[in-house]
Amino acid sequence: MVHVHTHDRAAGFLELEHARVRWFLSINADTLPEEAKQKGQRTWRSLTIGGEEFEFSDGFTDLHTLSYQGILNGQGFPLEDARPAIEVVHDIRHQQPIGVKGEYHPLAALPLSEHPFSRNAKTLRRL
Image (cartoon, rainbow, N blue to C red; front, side, top):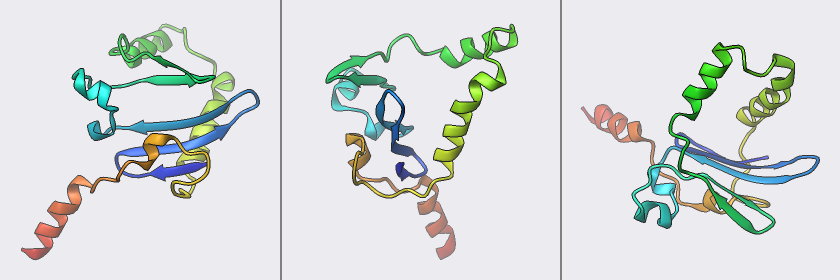
C-alpha cells in the first residue's frame, strides 16, 4: 500500500509473512526528525522493532559504492534471489497513493512541499 508518492518523498505500508512495515523515504531535508537537524545530519536511517528504535545513520556514506563494487567483483545476488525485492519495488512504484490513512508512517503526515520547478514554470508562463 502506498500512502504518499511525490517528487521528494514516498511512504507506505508492507505486510510481509513475518513483518508489518511502515516505510518512509525522502530526499527533502525538511522531513528529517528535529534531533537529526539539530546534530547537522543530512541523512537519517532508523528502524523500530517491537517499540525499540535502532538509529543507524552513521557509517553508510559509501554503501552504494561498496555494494556496486561487490557486484562487479562477482559478490552480488543472483537475479532469481533479487527478483522478489525487484517485484515489490515495481509494484510500489506503480500504485496509486491512497493518502495518509490506515497504517501510515508518522512522517508521511508532514506537510507536502511544492515542486521546485513549479515556481519557475509559473514565472515562465507569466513572461
